[in-house]
Length: 309
Image 1 (cartoon, rainbow, N blue to C red):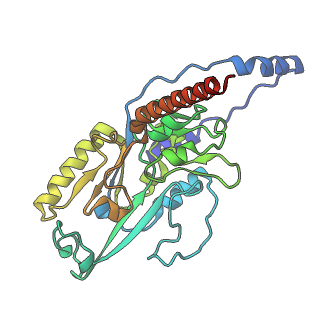
Image 2 (image 1 turned 45 degrees about the horizontal axis):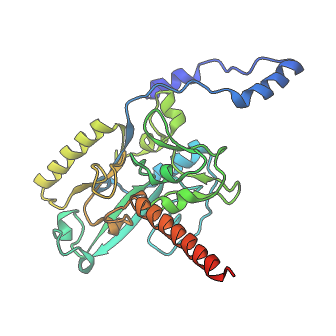
Image 3 (image 1 turned 135 degrees about the vertical axis):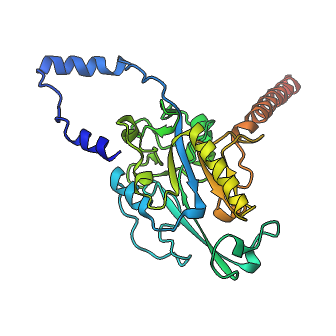
């Protein structure tokens, strides 16, 4: 990847050729009706995050902000461990979570805490770099009324900020609390999985900056195979509670192209134990809406005919 970045840095910079006033005017008139050629589909890519090797260094957070030119969130201690960003937001697309557990907080169905780390059995740290899950059937994508949210050629969920009207339907639809509106522009923002870097053959900035290879990037099929082998290895090393979250579809939610290896319940990491796609309720909502409308019309007709002299 380093050689590829050096190769790109040596390419000449180009700009739009100069145009006259007439051609510029024609361009402005014709441009809204032009449709560009859709990019050819590429192999689906995503993230596999191994929380067992995350050290909480926040290199991924810094790399994400630096590459995407996201503003600082300030330096305000939350009082919750070493976390000063608290949650994902329109200006924080990567968030490292710190969960400190004591022996009485361990899940009853899990192995003792001291089987997970070399620390004292009285406590352990769980750390996870959180981000957008890039769901295969994303509720935010389904809820967007303007077409601002799309699935790009890498099957990643991408928000086109210039088309977003700030309605926040995607914010309400996401069961993971990933998307938020910007206080400055009013548009929704989230992780793009470094779409601009992927198009140039580069890995996302967060994965490149991770010093422990907790964040893995690549084709989703290869990541799933790699993650399952890692789970098997952890089971053989005495960590039977290790499992994958989001790598396969469930009855209520699709598979995620950014999934995790966890060693405790999802709720401990701030993730829903059983994510649910609100779209599954839509059929019932439509039926109830139609039934309510018909009932209102029937009541109106009854009133009209009863009051008729």
